View 1 (tube, rainbow, N blue to C red):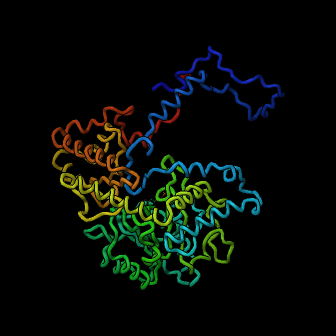
View 2: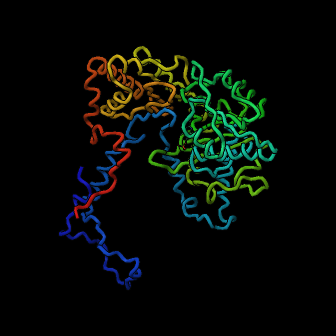
View 3: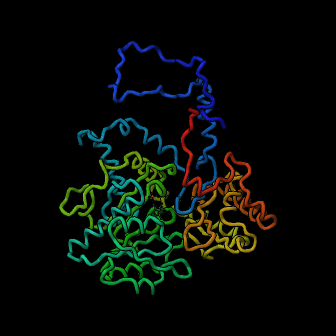
Length: 466
Ligand SMILES: *Cc1c(COP(=O)(O)O)cnc(C)c1O
């Protein structure tokens, strides 16, 4: 595809705008450009086609199947966008007097209330702008709690080795030492390892449940009890509540602090860098440490102004439109869809854990790699030629040659059947003709870039000749 600069021609009139009849206001010499601005010159039709072409080359949930495990790339209902576009929500200013934005405050308070109800927490802040930010906020609550009790030797946060990478990173950012514990053969917390890890220096445990291999930990109550008995607090990574919302609550599992990702579970589009929102919640005994309370003991604000407000509008719209029956029904369908795909693939694709899964399942291609040289990366690349987005690759780290599939509740059976057929077809190709798998994809606009080079030296600006 030609770039907009390459399509440009300066010898054709493109001026639509009336001549400006106001005196020009030039910046001071110091700030004035030395060279003219190099804007491309194109007629409107060409500009329109350029952007349409770009849009066609972008893949999103609206284009097709997008099963990124751990990410919940679900379809986000259009009504969310309609609500978030209402002028009463978009034409406000963060410095506006409080009494003139009462409706907006009510949106936030209502959402906080529902998030408390869904998670089993007593208080929520909408401030954190992403999941990792929510983790950081929640960990500061844990820190404030121990500090106020004078229990300053509690400097360690226990994190299972299956955790999302943000967990140890946030714990380190919050000033804790990270203690990693191994998972057991089912991918769940190893109780003996946990018992050995807890002690007088334990500030808390961070856990994802269902965990990142898509399994609900059967020992969850025992786990939170062990941590509490040692004097630590329990942090729940609720980035992805898709399997349990409306069914099981972290608050009832014994967790004290949580975050949820509105841009995963609660249907705000994500990818491309946001905006997201990762509200933090906690039990009553920690509530006064929350940001934005202005109360003594509060950890202070973690961002300027209230929240990524329009994301909150979308989440509330989603929760209200699904309602008390719809929320658990969505969770059930997410689990059903994942298990349907898993069962339909498991005769040829080895599963990392062969039990009933929650919202996602993990394939391990270690054997295929060993026998044919075809890697999880090759398989993922091959999927691009079929016009679907590959699943998450090489995560969780505890599974070798991992493909982690989360179909979500919004896919129809027909789509799942098509995708199952594609997965099977690719597996057949890989077994019969492994060599050509290293060349995939062959039909996409960009074929197979050198991934390291592309990450280290991305070419993201146009290089003008002279
Ligand atoms: C996505 C995710 C996070 C991090 O959320 P961000 O908004 O990307 O910072 C944390 N934990 C889990 C389990 C996740 O899936």
